[in-house]
Length: 121
Image 1 (cartoon, rainbow, N blue to C red):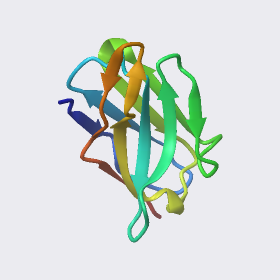
Image 2 (cartoon, helix red, strand yellow; image 1 turned 60 degrees about the vertical axis):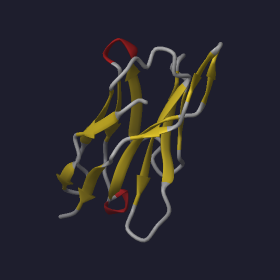
Image 3 (cartoon, helix red, strand yellow; image 1 turned 180 degrees about the horizontal axis):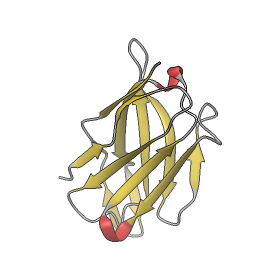
Image 4 (spheres, rainbow, N blue to C red; image 1 turned 180 degrees about the vertical axis):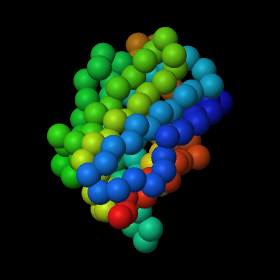
């Protein structure tokens, strides 16, 4: 069982920046893909960005060009740098391990508890 703990959320003005961090309780070196998701009030949880073990990234259209996902396998950490934040980015942001194989090693789906990001003046 892997635990994920997010941090770095908070209140920021429109146009500002925040950096979210997600630390895993175990090694992420053999986890093929990890990602950030978000859920705004009254809306479904949605994908924000993913990153593979090889560093390939994918972003939702709404954040592409503003957000950057990264991972540090040595520190069992993934991050989300969020720039030019907009009020519509307000949501609870979750870290997740994507279910799947890396070679013979299988990883289940795990979620963090979430961190609140509020973009408001």
